[in-house]
Length: 331
Ligand SMILES: Nc1ncnc2c1ncn2[C@@H]1O[C@H](COP(=O)(O)OP(=O)(O)OP(=O)(O)O)[C@@H](O)[C@H]1O
Ligand SMILES: [Mg+2]
Image 1: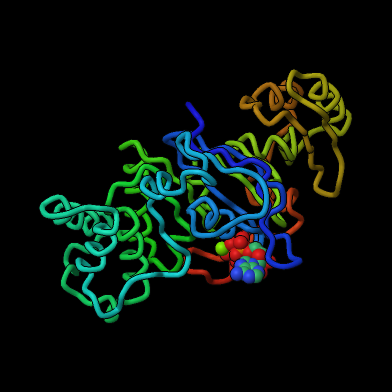
Image 2: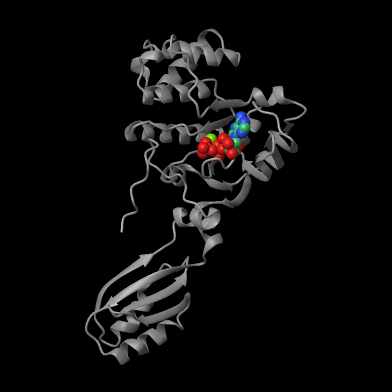
């Protein structure tokens, strides 16, 4: 893997407000790079700089070996942009909108027609090619917005909240297609408020907060930054308390076990194990060997949500993919 985008100590201010503060990260060629952060973290500001749409105060951005400050034109030619605010023309049809954007990138004639058709297919709007954008539903316009950004087969695709308001089925189609774009050689920077979506699609994730990088890595790496353990909870049935205590003492010495405790009203055992421990049978065997009944056991593993909370101190304006407030976490 080689770095395709290198952002170094990027700073962007709006008056006194430091929207992006000495931010550094790299995006590897051919990956889907997830960009996560709470509202106002500086995601769109960063993407606007990378997209050559906004100036910046300090730092440097290199894309495909081109320095953004010196050769913005070279970079522009590589880009496909799907903006957070839908930018399509209401009076034009779906096909006309796509053709307009693709022609700005130099596509003409047959190439333009086939690129337009492919992009319509890509977002599931093939049957709506003659529908005016102004008459489309919000979700359809979002899909058209995506088609306009990718029709010219860009090398670097920057997607800022592309699926807000898109229904679940279309979203799945879109996510599948984004993977296809990556498999076809594109590099994708993907911002979403919908954490499960980022988890599902991103090869690596950057968490940014207040204009700074909080963490970067694969989902498992990010979780590993915050904690090195998960908890196995075991509820015992019949069995002598001294047997259970002896089993728990034995558990504490097993490989991968960080600590084991017994107590509480329900006679619950809590065993902290290293994150990568997969085999819990040695733990359960210490009880079985002493004829202690096991009523139930489960695993409390940290997820990206808890990691995000630990790193930023705020919940992601989580919401569902339609931008609705998140339902309370399931117990
Ligand atoms: N044109 C602007 N003028 C002044 N301040 C701005 C401008 N654009 C953004 N900001 C401020 O810069 C900060 C970063 O905004 P940005 O839009 O980059 O955040 P974001 O991470 O994309 O947020 P969201 O999740 O809400 O899209 C915010 O405090 C915002 O108010
Ligand atoms: Mg934004």
